[in-house]
Image (cartoon, rainbow, N blue to C red):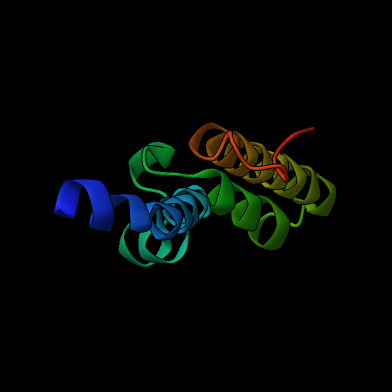
Length: 95
């Protein structure tokens, strides 16, 4: 009963939760900044941390904005690809 009834009912919720987890992992900033500030020689630096450092610490606002745009494109593209793969039979995902 669980395999054929309950699990298929949870598919939509699972897609949303995993999608949000992927987006949040790409935007990881707070824990890395608090713990390591990018780590020794930027070893734990993410795109969000690079964006913050360039825009607000080094005052390279244009470079920070470009990184933010690239991060936004990556997040939207990965979310779209994930949703397209998980729900191929719905009409809204067809482009």
